[in-house]
Image (cartoon, rainbow, N blue to C red; front, side, top):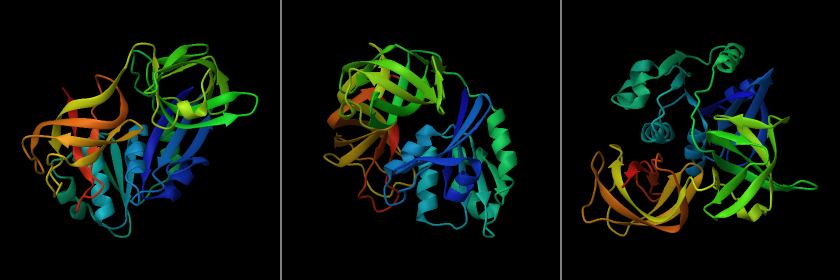
Length: 317
């Protein structure tokens, strides 16, 4: 089964038009299935009160649908997040008489500048059919699954819900559980309530796991092909500060590092303070271990910021 996942910002109504409400927490999933195709819309339910749901929803979405009915700090922070995460594919729906020239200064010289801009919400049925027709882009390589929910099921054991970020997961496959460094085995796989023997990149999966407890696979855990990922307790990062960050990145600042569905406190060490738009090397001492892939580009956030809470992102050195 092929799955397309979209992040929907500022409109539970649009998400509900695309699918039926499913798993609900600080992010809410809306699902629709047609034949061998499925669609999931992810909404950051607790944003802007909480920042992580926004970044988690953007991570999960192949595309972003942003509904704008007013221009405020919330919209600004969403745009900064899309830029820092690098979401090149998206659509802006303008409602409540907002005009394209009003958002142009905010999107100029960002990835959002290339997004489609639509007046109104359009036809949800046509949008759903369009999304179902898209073939997800494959990402070959070692299996990598980011867990967003886990829970016990009587008679089954531990079940995890997550996104196949790369490669293929197969029934009976042994996987590393990171950062706990435990090992589990896939008992069974479900994609939108259908039992399958394997599935690949882009699929939202439910995995029944052997030899593992729910507490060993909390949200943010990564299930990976054995030996394919590392666990970091500190890292050097070439950080690019977003141009709208109004504070200063300084030595000893306590921030959070976001990587996939992981959200970890960390302390910065740096010899050179960095301001918005600047780039430089920092060292992050992590409060708890972080599962890392060489391709990852962690996002740094500062929850006490006077403006956008998203500091920037960087390349591990």
